[in-house]
Image (cartoon, helix red, strand yellow):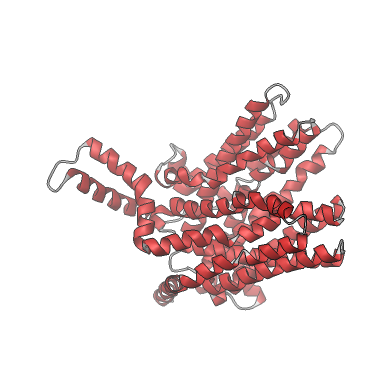
Length: 473
């Protein structure tokens, strides 16, 4: 049974049991909690502001809070090192941070519902920013929990964890994200009351924390060893270690050592290549995603058709193919999964080019959405599995947050110019989607140049798996 839970299963029944194991169900629930705050500061907030008559510029200003997700690596070392009073002793380090952030999101959301936007708009924006900060910190904690809960001898299981996290995130964002819109249309309901419900729902989503088991790692031992090395360097051989040295060593291990260890372990060239690959891999997909709604409207689809195909259909496609993509990646390996999934992700964009030429064809739209959802889910699972594999267990939160933030920067900042590109092409959507197809090529070239060290990491993971299987029967 232990082997079944640690390796790619064979047979439908075993696959179902594999994904229903407690660890992966926990990751799914935590993924829901990760995606849900985006509803509060994203689509629901935009609808609320729009119904109150605020300008597009004002609504766009509120959207700036999402920039927090691009820089959350700046405080990620604190999530690795600082223990939360009372909660950490009760729940453990990782779970306590997750619950602390969830309580912060819920409290901030409830407080936001009490604000009069017409007279306190700037203050409301600050509260929305607070939700984003708690949410981005929760993401750090959940990603660290997911990686730590999967043993180093279970490298390929990272793909399954990534799939359940992706499926959970989309369920929280797209599935639960529809609820406030249904509630707001009910008689007697207004947005402040809806936001009170959203706050309560966030508390219910803390179920993942209570189902979770605190992962057992050597993190504190490894951090302590690093701290002693810093103290020895600072104090000098044979000298008494003063309090100032201890504080400096603690800060060094907290703020400097995670990045230093990442570059030292991987080598500067490989580390920079990884970060550049992470930056570029999802840019083409982000360009497409940023302009997709505008494209659908301009090509002639109704809002209800857009909602049906791009939201509801894409939600289920993402969940199903995240799980299938993880299964395939576990069997063929992360490196092959990245090459195949990345190439397929780029080629699927050509269907949108065809749609731009043909016009509002529902069958072609359905084909494009399914293809895009499938390839995006598969490539995302392989991508998350890779950066999870690269994170050192002593500094999981910091190193994963660094790579995730670089990827988010590529998706948010670079993709912000997608509209400029469409305008530059005089609205030629067919050529635009062709360009998004070509955008993946640089990242795949970088991946090719670093394929050997990545393969070596996978081989090392398989060797640990084999030793664990032998020792545990």
